[in-house]
Image 1 (spheres, rainbow, N blue to C red):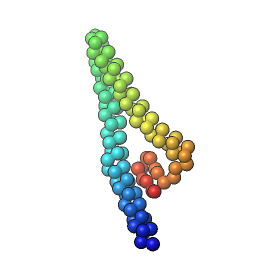
Image 2 (cartoon, rainbow, N blue to C red):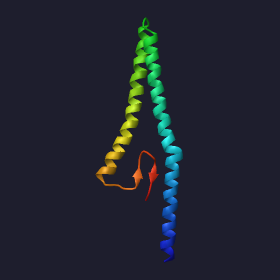
Image 3 (cartoon, rainbow, N blue to C red):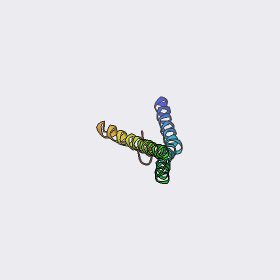
Image 4 (cartoon, rainbow, N blue to C red):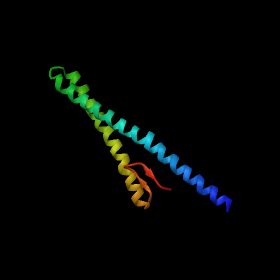
Length: 103
């Protein structure tokens, strides 16, 4: 009986640890990376529009826009793939948007 109590206690602690890591580290990091990709995209737009006479700077602006879009699409893809995996295997107790995990 004592082993079951300790196992339940350990599972509860692991659940809280995963929730805390997700809420305090992973979700803010993903939001920060998405914001950085968006800013990189906006810098590319400004660089492209401001340098109508300099073809080299316009090309650099196009590359910034492209890589900003790629970065944003990768992060959107991560959430999409996660949701597909969770629905395919019928995983319950994980909310990707809020970061709540119930083991």
